[in-house]
Image 1: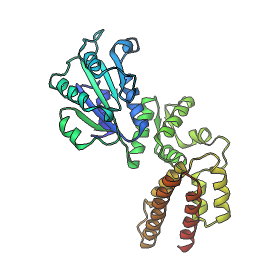
Image 2: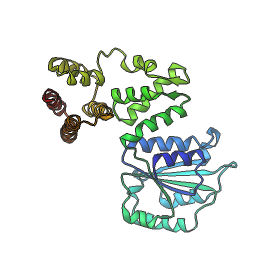
Image 3: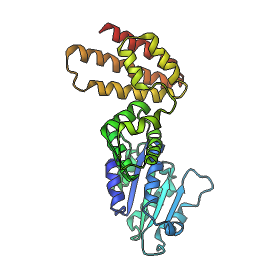
Image 4: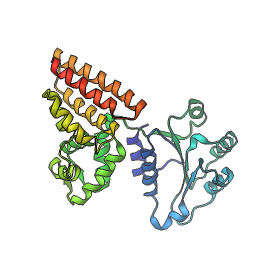
Length: 299
């Protein structure tokens, strides 16, 4: 099950008794907690929302967490018990969890949060839990952005989504932060023109301009734009924006020459991705730009 399924569960009030949510992106874990918290009325949160972190060495014993699950909630609603960093659960506590699942509370919702992939032996032993994998691939980000905007009270156009991804890249945390700014516009429908000033601020250039300069084979302009961008962008964020821009460029391109060019482009982008993760410096980005200019000149 996917992030979209999780949103469906949230809308329905988390009807299942037990959930296992997993993600390799800490932002999505944090957002999941926020959405669950939003299901509990503010005046009930001290009583009907409990969050435990298994990485906290000063945390409560697991037996006490089970007691919280089995305690009848205050008020008339459900009690939500969130157990973070479930991947760190000791074997003895895992056995206690299995015992609880044989006879779970009918008035509590337990949510296990797992950082990274859930190991197969764990999956096999916890089949009765509703497992939802929260990670979002890049193709799903536009849908995520639109849904996120809807929850904030406005609609965002396809053009605005493309511009946002082309400028910011696929970093979900940064994209979410930008959406918070758009709420200041005070409109129910947000388009590209509405957000340019908010995103760009005093910046002269963005990833759009960089791509245009590469395709124009203008080496001097490419590195002039890059010298500005590196002051405000992280290497990986800039790479994400370039990936998105070239991904959009594929649309409608089916000639042999175009496909060969794009194959080579994504080959050097992939190698740059590996190099940036290894070094964390800007050098792989600079080498990438040289290669992209060279490919443009070869067309």
